[in-house]
Structure formats: C-alpha cells, structure tokens
Amino acid sequence: MSRILIIAEHDGQALNPATAKTLSGALKMGISNIDLVVFAADPSAVAPSAAALAGVSRVLTIAHDDFAHPLAARLAPEVAALAGDYSHVLAPSTTFGKDLLPRAAALMGVNQVSDIMEVIDERTFKRPIYAGNAIVTVRVPDGGPVVATIRTASFAAAEEGGSASIEERSPQASNPGHTRFVKVEGSDGEGPDLSSADVVVSGGRALGSSDNFAIIYSLAKKMGAAVGASRAAVDAGYVPNELQVGQTGKIIAPDLYFAIGISGAIQHLTGIKDAGTIVAINKDPEAPIFEIADLGLVGDLFELVPELENAV
Ligand SMILES: Cc1cc2nc3c(=O)[nH]c(=O)nc-3n(C[C@H](O)[C@H](O)[C@H](O)COP(=O)(O)OP(=O)(O)OC[C@H]3O[C@@H](n4cnc5c(N)ncnc54)[C@H](O)[C@@H]3O)c2cc1C
Image 1 (cartoon, rainbow, N blue to C red):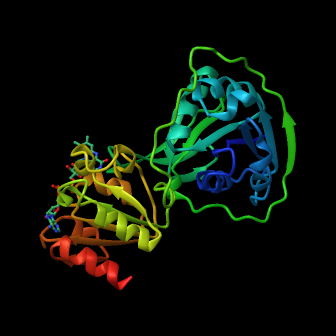
Image 2: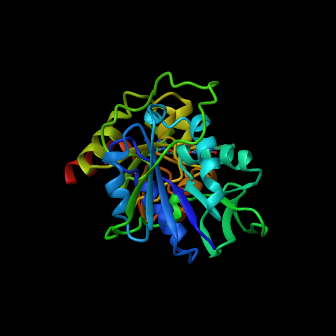
C-alpha cells in the first residue's frame, strides 16, 4: 500500500512554511496515508502545528540532542531507517531538503527526483531542467520507493484544520561521528524569510554599493517585505550570498516581486518564474525585465525608490 513520509523542516520552534507546501505536493499524489516526521531535540513546540495540517495522517516525533541542529549527515541514516515502511519519502527543495534527501536516497540505494513542480500520478512528475528553460516528465521505475524533493514555489501551502495523531518514536541510527555542528552564519533575522515571503524587494548591480543598498532595505522594511538581490549584486559584495535570487540562488514565489536595477537575465528570471505580480524599475526601457514585468517604471532608481517608499 502506498504511504508517504514527509520530513518536516523547522527551527525547533515553528514549522517552516516549506513543509506545508511539500504536503500540498504530496496530496496531489492521491495517496491518503501521509505521515510527517519531526526530528528535534524537543519536538513538543513543532509537533502540534504539524498535526494541525489538513491531510496529515500521523506525526512521528523523534527526539535526540543531536537533532538540535538539522545536520544532514546525522539525519540521513534516520530517514533511511524509517523509509522501509513507506512508498514515498519527500522533503522540500530548500537547502534543508536538498542537503538531506540525496544522502538518504544514496543510503537507500535509489535515485532521488529533484524539484517536483507538477504531479502527474504517484510515480510520474514534471520537473525543470536547463535552469527552468525546459520541463521534463520523469517516471520513477516500479520496485523501489520514490524519494523526491518538492519545489515549494510550485505549490501553495496546505491548509490547517487537521487533527493527526502524534506518535513518539526513538532514533534508530547512531551518530556517524564524522560531522559536527560548529555554528550558523546567516542574516540578522530581521524581516520575513526570503524563501517564503509574500513580498520581496530585490536590488541589482545598479545599486552600485552596499551603502546604496540601504534604500532597498528601507523600502522592504516599510512594506514588510524580504530583501533579495541579483547575482551581480551579490558578487559585487553589496549583500550576502543568501539573498541571491535565481538559478544559483533561491527559487521564490512571492505574491509581489520588485526587481530594482535588475536587467532580467534568464538566470535571474528562473528564480521568480512563479511570482505573482512583478514590478520592475529600470532606466533602460529595453531591459529584458520589462518583457516579463506586470508593471514597469522606466527611470532612475535613486529617484523612484524613495518616491515609492514615500507613497507606501
Ligand atoms: C551559470 C550562471 C548562473 C547564474 N545564476 C544567477 C542567479 O541565480 N541569479 C542572478 O540574478 N543572476 C545569475 N547569473 C548572472 C546573470 O546572468 C546576470 O549576470 C545577472 O543576473 C545580472 O545582474 P543585474 O541584473 O543586477 O546586473 P546587470 O545585468 O548589470 O543589470 C543592471 C540593470 O540596472 C539598470 N540600471 C543601471 N543603473 C540604473 C539606475 N540608476 N536606475 C535604474 N536602473 C538602472 C541597467 O539598465 C540594467 O538593466 C548567473 C549566470 C550564470 C552564467
């Protein structure tokens, strides 16, 4: 019988919205048994919200001090040990899922399907290739389990309203010992998370310096938006790497996206393919970003952005 296991992504306090989007992808597979597993030092804060997601049959909680930080090297053997009971093992195609699931698939001796963007049936999926320029349909051969990451930008978050049971389980694998947590370096945590924000304000090379990027942060703050950037802005050192949107950055699907001083290279557009409304500000009326923008302002960003901020 088909049964899905979803690996929950969380920070120990709250479920990452990517988990509810992964659940939406799972629900499209037409399989009614869907378990969600929470690995944590103390799963008690996260498990109730996991159980409240509509469509989840059971939440499995597995507690261990090792899980205070989600190290893929430590979690992968646990996932592989659990997987025997399941026909499908899924995780979001976030940094967390992309790190963890290929390791688990390797331990299980199967291939992983990356970035499912559409479900045809429980073993057949569509996924992007060539930086999103082509979509390929793949079928997982019968016999082994389906191990796959779900492209969170392609699925809306599953609703709440469920009341799944919560079952405690024990860790089954030992710590491989070769990998240990040292520290996390990231943004200061201000503002919404770029991967899941409803509104994103991104700046490009045209900002010219990290000091000038302050106008992007200021507009984003006023709008309650996350800040993003083009690769050119990241490579020039204006903003940290984790803000990069695009093929080699984050793939996002905000309701509203501002591309400010960004030309609209294909590698950038790959990251915003599923965005709702795209607003572009660029002084070049021929910039490719205007071909996909819903609203375009032609002009100097250093004049238009402060005006926009005043109008918000
Ligand atoms: C393998 C590969 C992967 C890549 N991955 C990514 C990726 O993930 N994300 C990504 O973004 N890029 C990626 N790139 C790079 C991509 O090809 C572009 O080089 C990059 O997106 C350009 O960034 P930009 O639009 O900020 O800069 P530019 O292309 O230099 O554009 C700057 C724009 O700002 C406008 N401008 C200048 N001054 C002003 C002003 N005062 N007011 C208003 N507008 C102004 C200009 O008209 C121009 O359109 C990748 C490239 C490769 C080869």
